[in-house]
Image 1 (cartoon, rainbow, N blue to C red):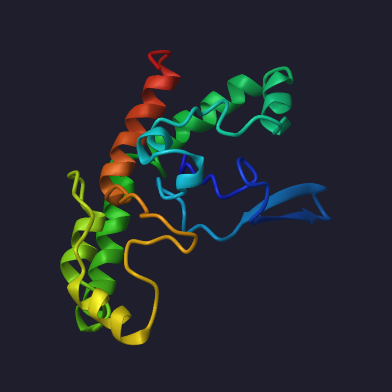
Image 2 (image 1 turned 45 degrees about the vertical axis):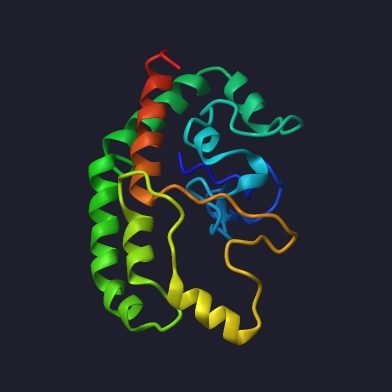
Length: 184
């Protein structure tokens, strides 16, 4: 649902598996989630990540999901779990409420941070499409600190702007719904 492709789905790393001995069940523990929500550009554009397949969200060679979904009853289980996600934890309303609550708490700290742009922070969370945030205070701070040029990837070339968080979520929810309904 999150389109987290800097993970076993694409890169094959950034997770731990924990075996809970009393139950014999494995627990998946993801980490390094900074590229989630349409930000992992080696895996495609933000648009492609918003419309990522729910049944094949990986690059070729990753057989785990194919094998799991081939097991009797697992496709139905999988669909039910996605339906449940869209009805509760990953519903647009619930996600937006969580974002608004977190935004309210951290906004004062962003406003006080001389290396951050409050305007860029607000735009990065919005539901409307936006151009790349302009962050004059951050640019000035980086220029003075000798850090790399803003908007430049460590390996060269400009990094495309990420979609605003609420826009990504709204579009991702629409895509998942269309896939579950057989329309995409």
